Image 1 (cartoon, rainbow, N blue to C red):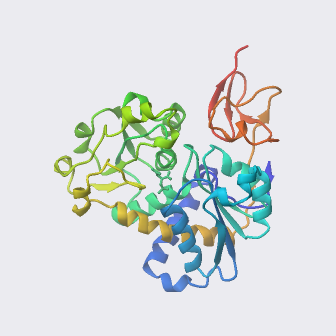
Image 2 (image 1 turned 180 degrees about the vertical axis):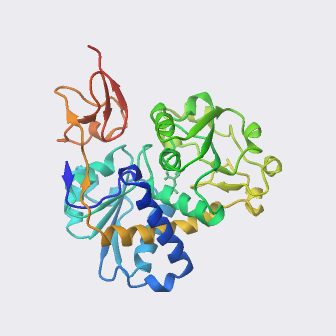
Length: 360
Ligand code: NCD
């Protein structure tokens, strides 16, 4: 299904050149913020946050204000008509008539794509469940551009909750499109990166290896991307507690890192990075959060300036076939076309990317 608007649901809906332009614009705004203070005068951005957020929501809001626009929205669905049971389609449709741009965060995978299907303005995905988080990836890319000077030829260690971490999924999908990037995936067997993301890394020309020890990886890394164990995505508290505190980056471990290593984390940090590490010049996570605002200024300007229609659904529906992922938006949102990519017995849900094996 084609939309008249240009959305950002998944970075991989766009070519690498489009990402590069946003990152370069973000770098220029960072250097010369005064040049952009009226870039979006008179425009209104709505933030619809169905899940908690500090950085993503506030950096989007600050970004819009810093380019001259205004903001509306909610950060607690309990105080909006969502609490009365309004579906995502209706809320999006209405708010998109009040705003020039919608930024949405929602607990279900594929929710941003659903929002875009009904919105009368562009939609930006600010995190859809455990699926994707493209604007965190733009943040990470600007950080790499500024602090490492490149987005290629990097050995990137990703550590922690690789199965549920949407920031990790988006980052692997994007960085694997640049030459000579190698991923070291550090996790317990239960929290390994989903197969479909590993397949994307390989298909894009990237390489990866899986490890269970952070100590073994430390000396090899150009970038260490630490993540929080995503408590809210576990089926039970017991399962979460079994994983919590497996990986903790300490000052001691930092001694084994390269001198030009940078440590990133999308934040919030719980116990996975010892506070003493914050004083290490290689700890870049607070700077990274700062870059996030500049790259979001660049993204808002780009989306409001261009008008390239987005293709939202390219696959097909199959009579009686539904996505089996319990976290997929198609399980809760009424009236959606259950659309899949692929043919034969292997189909991929177009909303959450989960694979479905059909038995014949
Ligand atoms: C991340 C998120 O919400 O996915 N935070 C963020 O956007 N900066 C990571 C997390 O919550 O652990």
